[in-house]
Length: 140
Image (cartoon, rainbow, N blue to C red):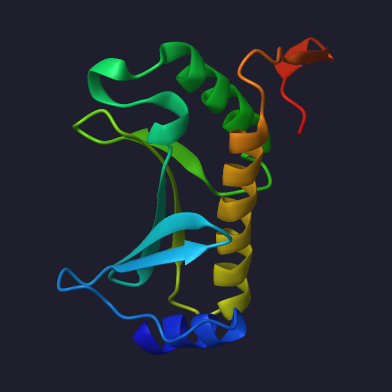
C-alpha cells in the first residue's frame, strides 16, 4: 500500500507522503485537507465538512440536508458518502479497494473528492434544487 501511495504522490507532483504514528496520511490537495487511512487492502479517504455545516451542537441541519441531497445525486458517478463522527463532525469519505493496485482508481477517487468539496464549498446555501423528471436534484 505504501508503494502505491508513494506512486500517487509522484503522479500528483507532490513530495513523498509520510504516514503519521497512527499510520494515516494527512494531505492538502488544491487547498483541501484530506486524510488517507489504510485499512487492510482498502484506503479510506476523508475530508471534514464542518466548515460548511458546523459540528456537534452547532451542526446546521439545513446545510446537512442540502449536502446529502447533492451527494445522493452524484453517487452514481462518485463513490463518496456523507458520514458523521461520534462527535457530530460531518465528513465526506470514500473507500477504495487497492487489492488490484490500480493507481488510476486512486487518482479518480481523490479527484472526485476534491471536486465534490469544491462544489459543496461553492454552492450558495440558499440555492434550491431543480425538479427534473419528478425528482429534486442539485445541479453544479
